[in-house]
Image (cartoon, rainbow, N blue to C red; front, side, top):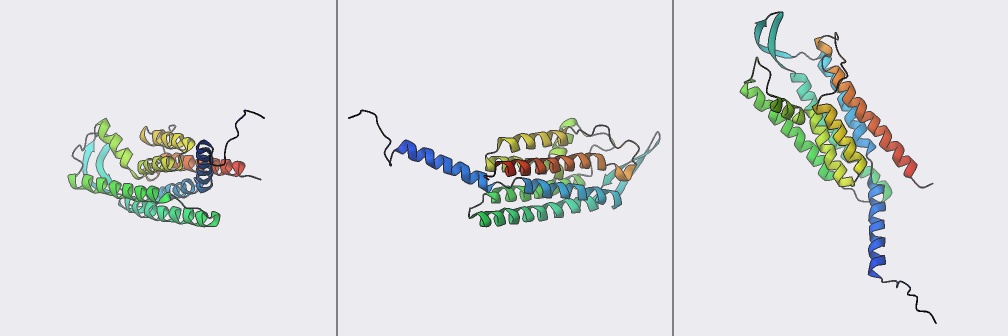
Length: 232
């Protein structure tokens, strides 16, 4: 006869541990983190050509020592961002749903997609409001706080904010750190001094190459991590 205890089949602690383990495995199976990063990288790279070949709208030009300074509105680029990002989130939602069906699981991508679309709408509202105000700081540079908020709600900043939501949904610390790093690059901004002498038509290219390249590298990294984690 022994006094050692053996956990019963209905042991609450064992059941709770099993439920948590099952929930963790489901979350891992639901992750398709590489997909939104890849789609958003392609959208970012596409914007380079729109800025290059689109015609900016100039107004209120004033002479300065070595030329003139004007209010600039990249109309075609703005419409590109709004349209391309909404379509990108539709593609991302479709991709998550397809993977979920293939694996026989549900998906929690809807809050991320809705947040992404809402941020696109907010970004558009900020741009339209600024246009209606007719850039009240011109010809001076806006205060640092105003510049920070513009970068935050710019389409590239909105991408990073939406990624924070995805990191929360997927309970993924690695994605949270990636999103914070991406936002740092967007908000500082970090461009390594690229673009000097590239001309006005390529002025946006250096930052967009860096932003898009970071998203692309993140997509490749998360795809590789998922492949290595997959049971053989």
